[in-house]
Image (cartoon, rainbow, N blue to C red; front, side, top):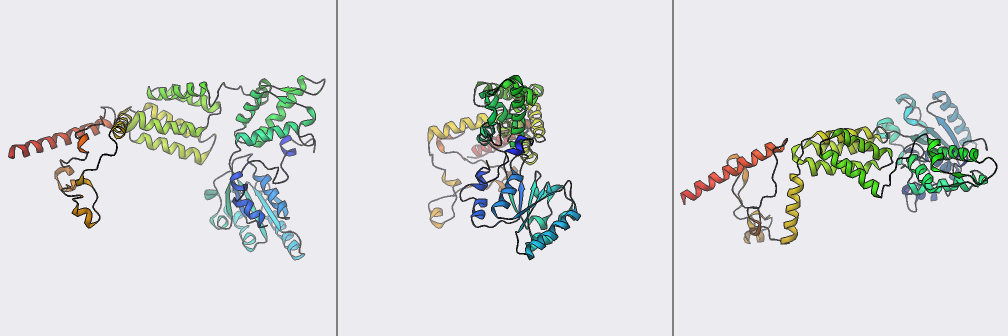
Length: 441
């Protein structure tokens, strides 16, 4: 065991040692409830690498006193499955342990191979636990999926990773405790950040850094794991970045202003800097979505759709593939025509809403669903726009205190030029109708 990698030596053996996934294992959550009842249904564990899928499957089987059989979609086939099924039948007939069949990378099986599991899962001969990094909706056949509960495992949070790192440094039986290592705060933070929620990556990198630290101080215990040693182990320099400090705001400011200034090259550089330094991609996606409304607006109505779809694509693909969707959106927004007319209009309307308070809605545009409301003149005199030429009608929609207010001033850029021309045309038509009406009176 001492020759096994650190990540394997530290693999949790009990549910108490397991770190993370509180949304499944916390008090009153699905898995903890099932385990207290001693029931384990067939499961599909869906999550990124290093989040604990294999470990959790082993612990669940042990807690249910079941025979755990591991089956690799890469190395095994239907022939091996038949042997497992026969053994499970013999155990059942002899009154022995139930069988938990763990299938790693189950998405790699084709439809025919997945079909081979169905009768045995359906009959309860085996409890299937499949692990996959791919969306089960697309990779697992519907009949098998309908017989399993899909549990989504999340990347480990920094707090959970820090707990694992500390356990690795202090555990004398299975970890690095006998070396009496210490670690600099910057090195600890960088290890956690670069692991990207992957416990296996964290422990592998820590083990390499520990080996380097010991080689620097071969005469005895007490070596220090420095940021430089961690960078050497990971083979990547740490970019100066604090997600809550000045550098965070400096980079996001540079990114936003490069987008606003229509410089796609600078914009994508600053975005790459942030992602490489460990910024949350969802934070960048939120900034792109905000920018689409604040700085592009109706000059290109597609901008908001592109930004929202980039977030959806990232959530579907994950890292690193999903980062390309964020890059595409950034380039689109940087090269789109710009307008802050939406931002300005909302700001002015918001200021009036706060200044004037709850002004009453004019009676003629109030809803009148009851007889009493109609008797109180709700909706009286309302002009239905579709009954008038061009679908427009002269009618006051503001409270009297705000009559003739104009908040939205579209620019001459992009699609907004068409909006501006349309509004000017409508206002001209209404002015002509008003003039004719006044002349007639």
